[in-house]
Length: 176
Image (cartoon, rainbow, N blue to C red; front, top):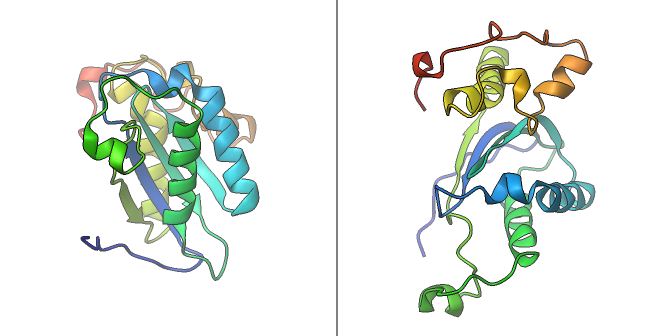
């Protein structure tokens, strides 16, 4: 089995992108309450701080700060992905390879991870997380996307409600 290079730093802060296999799916927002429930359970058992998160129809972006002495983000994501998948019915027509691994084929197996290097890097990634629904053309204003920590940042006074200039032309957004 291949070993992917990961940057394990105990107590590190990381940006993640996790994606569904079906990129046309709306599963994550249709089942956002299930996802939130599993996320909270994993967070209670294996603590971490969510600095920013945005749930989109077919992918999730998150920025986490891990506890001192702990670098095991793969365990947390494995528990979140498998816990969420277990709550859903088995999809029809699964490939034999998925059945053999007892997978439903909902999530892409891998995910993107980037260790945050400094405050400027953190600020860029949190902004990326919050701006992503606009970038994908799902809303014209960041504040209009309900499944984002942006609203928590506004409530805490860290960002103004019209952050990122209010209404934005999604065609002018930067790429991934």
